[in-house]
Image (spheres, rainbow, N blue to C red):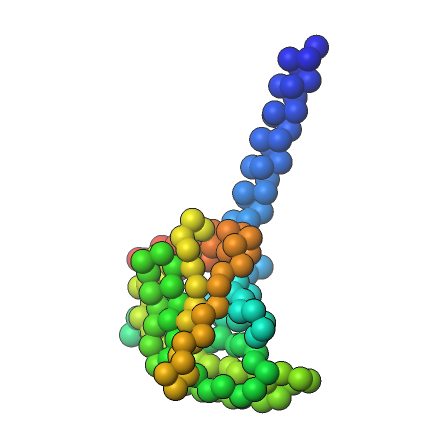
Length: 177
């Protein structure tokens, strides 16, 4: 009787874990795709995976169009107590780096904080390796010689990284056609 109860509990736990894994990899509600004559535009919805004590969170989204020059656009937003313009950024996951000079979209006040929105045009190739749930990830903003590090929210990263990986795996498969 005890063995049977234990076996049932183990099977139930395995089923719950399997459902959670499948749920974590569901991507349909995490991006949009629009087919056009000269390629397909993929856009990931904004996700908040990084934080900095005293500043808040960093949210980003990615846009990529197939059939073009292999460039993706990484847009990101962060908040600060004062306006602090960034000149470059580095998104890091393990040994994969997505970095470069940024274009300022806007800086504007919102309540007691300043909202900063930037864009980075970069090669799409690193995105195929970036979303590794086991990797250490962070973002470093550079502003006039200052480096501001945003650490990863581990739980959010482990949940979203398989989704990001699947999205870019899907893009790669569709581009290969």
